[in-house]
Length: 224
Image (cartoon, helix red, strand yellow):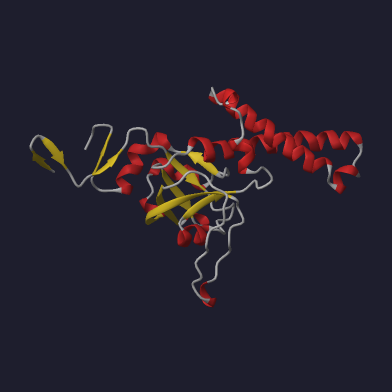
């Protein structure tokens, strides 16, 4: 760190105070981990609800987080209900069985809406993300570079002997991967995420434990 004409010049990583930290799965069994890694992105599923429909939510419903989330839930509920009612299996059920399936669908759509809201609306460019591999043996650590998009990406071909599953998730964000860390480098306060079942977690409360993993020298909230 140097002081030139009253201006501090530093090679330290400067982490903005508003930075958020996320845990994102590359599918339930981490099958898209290599795809995320080699092609510099993260993604979530729920392709039945298109990104353009979420972007079309009117401003009056975006005024508060509560109304915004409720509109997400309404959109997902409507999409899931339409799919359910058009399915052959659903039409063959008794009325009471159909009612049970609708209740299950409502819970499922609410979970999907909450997950997608976090990914599309709450995650920001400059946030940090952790992605676990199988059995959480290693993790990718990266920084978010883009807003959510649903366009195609080029998947790098590494040769016949290094083929990997290609993600079909439509909602994506570009990521710059900083490093790949072993499980024993993960802060103890984050070991619980190894057994968490959700696709995305906000782990910002653990920022002070995560930052030393990102860089040995950094400035965060006024502290070096």
